[in-house]
Image (cartoon, rainbow, N blue to C red; front, side, top):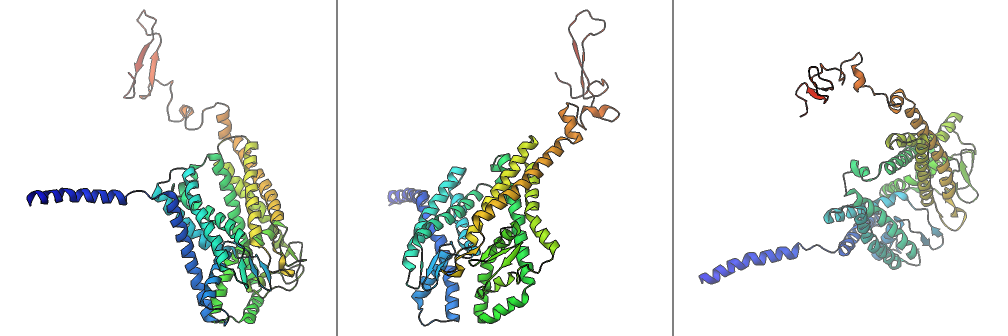
Length: 467
């Protein structure tokens, strides 16, 4: 009995250690990526299904049952990834809310960060691997949902769901995995100084333009409150419908901000074929009864004063100048031409990103007159790259040229001692190597008196003497 008990006692820790060893085995990255993709997609579908279910309960439709609610939720979830939907009797619906992308983007960002932290990611290559392991199964799941949710009433494009799902997951999970490398204030330290300067200038220009676009949208809505209230009255959504309508308008707010940015740049945007809303004038036809569209100008020339129009057109140049100043401040030393080139690169990248976002900010609202809605991507991108890039280049080059010609920089360039160095000894307290009374200076007596040898003798003062 004693031997058996002792054997069991020895076997118990061994079995526990083996069990711990089995549970501590790392899960393959591919399997972990599939889990993260399923978790992000499941959470997003659950949130969208709850919202669709609330709308169905508030306004029941006899032709839509619970299965139809689930199919509609899947289509709305795909629309959040900017997947075009073919609606029977209306045509292609491609002008989708950009704000809805924040839901899957945030979930994927969290999944990528959690997976990267669990794997102790330590480099850009591992970040890319984490992002791919999440993006591939996520894209396949999006395509499968597009095929399963299609009906005669509405059907999402499966190829577009595959591409859009992959792109959204790659960006969201990639940023989340990169965030796990370092705290947010120190993520830029992982880049080279020149790259960090260009990206900082681009981000600053885009942030200023986004803030200006949101402010312009708010001002336009404030000046059209009567039309805004009239649109709500025509729709008569009820209590629950009013809440859902508010969420939809908040989701379309990034689209409106990008329309305003395109307006500031000059090309403007369209609200139907043969229409244009630009600083030079507006030509509009009948628009859908959507409250956010009440911010559109009511006349061909608009109602804004001339000085306000000039300020609006100057915003892109101001954004580029601020980005250029940041580029000159952050980038390492160099010539004014190099600083100007980096400033132009930051502005050009900002313009490219604006053009891409402008493409997704618009799209068709059917096959009829509303088949062209929103800004032109290539026009907005090209004009933004020129306006922001040139102003950033001028600002960065001027800032570097002024810094090079400053008195402090000039004295350093000529080899003169900078303020606070050995020159402080001239009339000011400081260190002077020629002063033997300074207790922190080592003096060399090359020709000591009273000695015949020609070898120099080292004489030191103070506690800082060297052996």
